[in-house]
Amino acid sequence: QVHLVESGGGLVQAGGSLRLSCVASGSIFRVNTMGWYRQIPGKQRESVATITSGGTTNYADSVKARFTISRDNAKNTVYLQMNSLKPEDTAVYYCNGHSSSGLEYWGQGTLVTVSS
Image 1 (cartoon, one colour):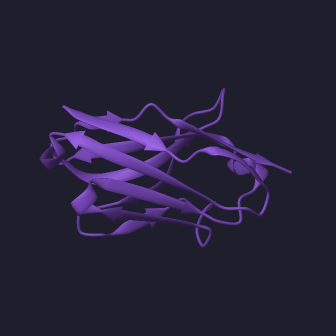
Image 2: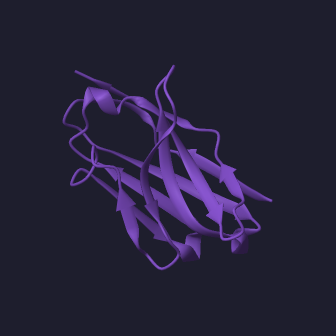
Image 3: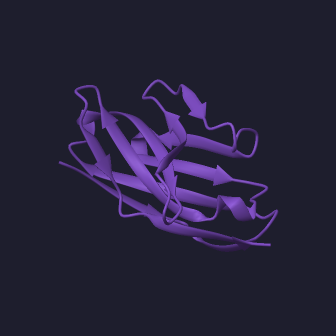
């Protein structure tokens, strides 16, 4: 089993920055791709950014040039640096781990609120 714990959410004004962290524990060897997803109440969860074990990244168009995903394999931690935040970035952000066999793991989520 893989356990993911997010932190770093909070309230920020539009134009501000936040950095989310996700610490993984347990059977880490199962996970190769890590990512951040977000969900607004009443809407589907959407992918924000992903990063493979080799460091290849992918971003949703809505966050490109504003968000940066990174990982520190030594610390089993994935980060999401969020700059130039907009009110529409307000959501619960979830950390995700994906194994090559198709297993998925989720954190409990952290709320990001961007005020206008």
